[in-house]
Amino acid sequence: MSEQDKSQPLPGGKGFAQLELIPDFPSITLQSTPTRNIPDKKQQARPQQANKKPTNNKFHKGNPDGKHYWLTPPDLRNRLQARFDFTFDPCPYPKPNDSDGLTCEWGESNYVNPPFGSIMHQGKKKGMTAWVRKAIDENRKGKRVVMVYPIDKWVLMLMAAGAKVENLGDVRWCATEDGSQGKGMGRHIAMFILEPNVAAER
Image (cartoon, rainbow, N blue to C red):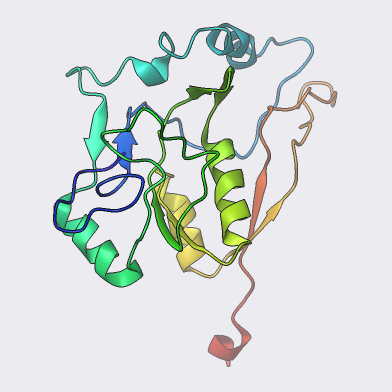
């Protein structure tokens, strides 16, 4: 959610979106070898976590120091505002009671710093996927969307090196023990492609 910018208030909020609820993010795993003979403890734990109410799951407990809400640093906020000329904030802080960034119409230039954890929205638990869908819909209307979210540094390193990314879907990896296929991870697998630079080799 946003830190108030009294000099340049934005519709829907008064600054930039919050960095809400910093959880411990595991590194993205590109390969898994679940088998029928060896239970996957992580997969067994997921339903228990999923059944918890959002107020009780790990995203809503906050950091050890008890802090839950993190605002965009003023220097970063000012740099981005000067670059993108934001006119709307769909994740404002403080959040007005009637504010709903997932259903309202966004502005022409939007800074989106969504909750890092799940939220209850219209009776359903929703996370980053819902914000991405909304951002894509608004962008198709000809609007600018600048979205921030924490990811592993190695992903950014590959992108900076010119890697192309393709979606392999939820791959059912084969077990080394007997070749049997697992049920999948419940997450799509990204394929990063670094082609040789022919011009550089010459």
